[in-house]
Image (cartoon, rainbow, N blue to C red):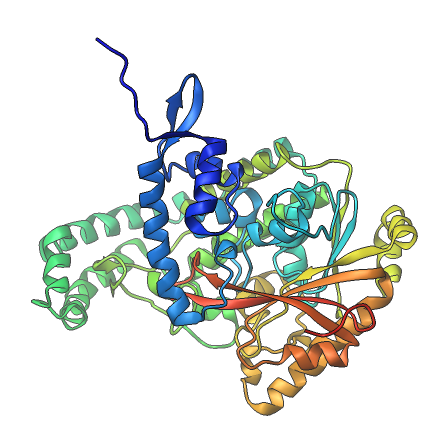
Length: 536
């Protein structure tokens, strides 16, 4: 049988050249390799070398052209499509430690990497950061910039006014003994299971799950019911409310049978409002264990696992985890799963899951992390924090290096005006751990809204941060700020801070984990000292 020849096969080099000509923009061999790596196109063989099929590559690009044009029509023709990272999966944007804990308003690591790493795109003309440079993130959030700086063999300093944000960031980049952490997690798991067994929680939840399963099989057959809802033969919310009433006597009978305490929302604390008494008991069992651990890094990581666990155990619906509406204390019709679901009475399931996931993610990061750089997040108000003084208190070696070397520049995503209350999103952790709250120091929080007064306060706050940070930067510094500037506030912010906007990159935001999946755009502002460049 003769050899089959496919004239459509292209080497990676030829595929990059063809793609560049076809799209009218630079395509590198790395871009083609990326498509192969994530199985977006299939891998072929050409005389023993990796190759791709030109027809398949063309089909892929054509599909993305349609999506790109649709978004350009919707969001503007000035979109930088390359910065959409349209070919990424959720697992790519939440790789290793980036998903140690949920956090609203964080940017994806690939965006940080693009601007920090000179090797991400061979067609980039300018290089702003190099290995061993020091990067500053004065709105550190959950520490994405710090983690990516580590990956790129760079040093980084973060600052955040939220104590809990600082905890998340430092946990992600800390060097932790995974064996000790694993032992601690297992001991805590054993204590939780013992409590649940002694208080008949396991028996209660097993029987409740069995009853719900029978009920759902009868009234919410998986495929048939969903089809009826989709074809509007059934109004699921009305039908669901009827079935909630039918399951309630069964639920109440099981509470009585196993002597399970129901939640009594009192509004006096977050814990007493959003958690069942049995869960609160378990949280304090774990907290007592954590407080006894003498290893600071292990103790902090256990707190993070517990926080992630309790977030998933709040008495709310599956569709309202990100935005709490009202406590759910009985079985309810779930619009996410098209069946009757229930609130949680124990934490063991999520504690076990998140303990295992945390250890896996930490190990994955350890496999690639740089060991000769530093990353640290400071708790403080970036408008007035003395970076040198805080570093001196926490680590004299890092302080001396920063003082001698100075900071190369800033990469950060300031809060969006009137969008998120950064302390309140982790209210459960603040309540349990008794962390100090600094809500009044947040810049542009949701509770202040988006009226003119709030916008003026936001402009003042962001510009004060930049003014305070400038003395710690080298001459000729570069600042990159990621912002959803729909109110056009950043030109005034730059002016007040004595900076010039030398470039803007408008990117569509496609890869989102929130319930609202609608695409929107954000701008990466590139700023320098006002005397360095003429304003665009």
